[in-house]
Length: 328
Figure (cartoon, rainbow, N blue to C red):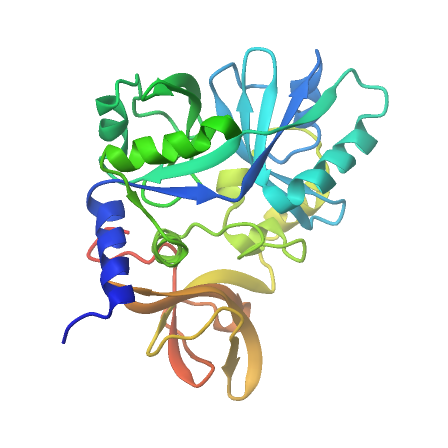
């Protein structure tokens, strides 16, 4: 049976991300910290080690309230004279205001940056960037450097929260359109939102405002090891993290993958014996795996292999990432 136009496009984009290279816009914004105590201040606010990073290094970190609720997930990039925070665009203003309130008289300044965030992904992404005359190279997670791509100045960072071995490029707004055209001309295929959802589910990459909100605790997301340093000192929400760690990380719900017998939209309730036990946060149809999703499942049904109901469709709980034949 021939694929529909949408399915054929999805298959092409998916193949590019898994076998070659693709690009996509990211709804992210930048907040820049400067001043002599910028790293020390952020170290005391965020869940991961900031003060121990040197220029060119970075980390992913969470900003929480005192009850451990997640206010934002971000990428923190340490540069020579500033620290750049990349976070969901809708969260920047509130995070900015919150950090200003906490800093009191500390010699730290915060400013919004106008740069646009563009993602690239796929096993040939770095190779194709190099073909444009850039000095791109495989970087450690969250490491970053300044370089030019086709003559356009960017910051390139290895992005552990993106699927398919992703990188993010920060580019001035007046050069963003030219960068998109340059990437497309160099063999990067544009990736749509549907394909990104497939890749994120398969690779177990939840995003804030889609799969994570201020209603969640870090332990519920499965991201503790990626966003938290067990050796650093106090930070906002640290007591909650420490208490949960001491109890084996037990929480009432967990983010899980789900294999569905039929597609269901995000927001679909998950039930067992007529009782609601969770909901889908992201859902998609994978060219390799069919209908898949991720969502929160009550701990009583969160064991991989458990069969539950998703809006009338059979759903099997699975660990994230959703590996296929030994590969995500």
